Length: 115
Length: 114
Image 1: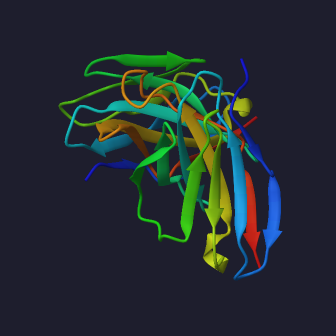
Image 2: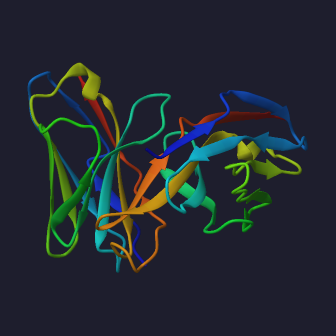
């Protein structure tokens, strides 16, 4: 069984640029959520996708956006990068929106540094 | 809204010492509770979970009991090892429109000395 995979693992961007982070869900999982983890902090919920629709969002501005594809893989896009966006971005997948259970499984994360 | 509060770290213990990391929660529904562990440079791994009151989750010598009366889910281990050094996150998952949403505490860093 393939786990959650994310790419790239590390990247450096300049303030004002745009970034796209990618995630492949664990096999059989159709729900994907994204989290931002700043250094020394717990993961903060950005948003969640179920069957290609965003079905919940945390306290993040609209410049954070996402997509989920028919194969349940997902992207996180961040526009107009700010220095405070520097963090570990974690993707997590789970079996189903409701009936499949509520345990989420994380990828290794993408480290974003904004300079 | 829902929230998770866990004890601040770092916690420093000698090998074979007893570990307790406190976690309390606030929730409007009937959440499931989790402990995740994060080793240096890695993502979060599920350590254990409990889905209803009085359930005990256990794994790798760690255990935690879902206490609804005290809204707590404290993590314990009877004898820690150096390899247990990591950051531990308490989390809750509750049902909302479209599925479950998981929120995390701030994490507690554990150092175990040989």
